[in-house]
Length: 395
Image (tube, rainbow, N blue to C red):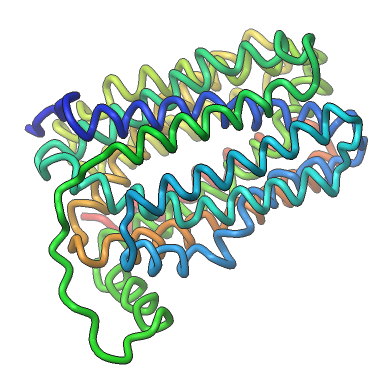
């Protein structure tokens, strides 16, 4: 049975930084699609905003992991947050002055995720230096739960309210949260990681390849990564077109869209509270299989029933089981990877897994041109395929 992560010291500040930053991020990510549909009525362009938020992982994800294993991870994280805060502040000013455009949305999404490839890999590698190994599952559950509570329960319902005060306000708040998160991360004093000296002449390319080899040699991580890639195609299709599903197919407007995001976040928060239980009873891999099967059923309900009352509980269940999947996946990666290569191996896993999301976003946009609920049904099929493929490879 895993130990609980303590709140005192570094983990408490790391948790606070993650939660504060997620509030701002959620305001921005909820507001961007609403802004996009006011600038264009082309579903593919709306979906492209989401795709650009994932594409940098394909270009820079592996490089970000190699850099994360070379540098002071704490310093890299707060520096990236300062840079992202400046970018979002500039975007807020552009929106306030009436200069927003689809091109600007695409550039912002691409730039923020490009910086995030270094931040996220450094954060994954930093956590084992902040909490003991036996508390990793608890720490991951608390981090992910706090982020979902802040982003969905607290932030998402505020989007329509903030937009009433001005279209730039969600982005201005996001910029401020990046600054606060940077200050919290800068105050951390993590334990030193014992890294063996790099061989003379070692290059980022060679170190990146080592991360890929570490992932490939571990059969469990390799299989989970493949399944996660397929589900990310599904999630990309769903997320990129959810605003169309809610506002067009259901006719629920921006209030319904905020309710959908809140339902998903509420389910994810509940999932964080129970995420360790399925693993304790079934093991981490079988807990992932259970999550995938239930998520498939939730997506079928979401795509088949044309009522907001059906969509909200379906998204809540989807979010709950998504948290179970994510906690087990992240903990498996941290438990099974040597600390000295965790940044690179995490980057390899994330890059391969996230590669599915931009493809899914574009597939979802294409499917939505046929029917607004088609992306949800497509996502259900992909989740089912991922679950069956993973089950067939595990004894």
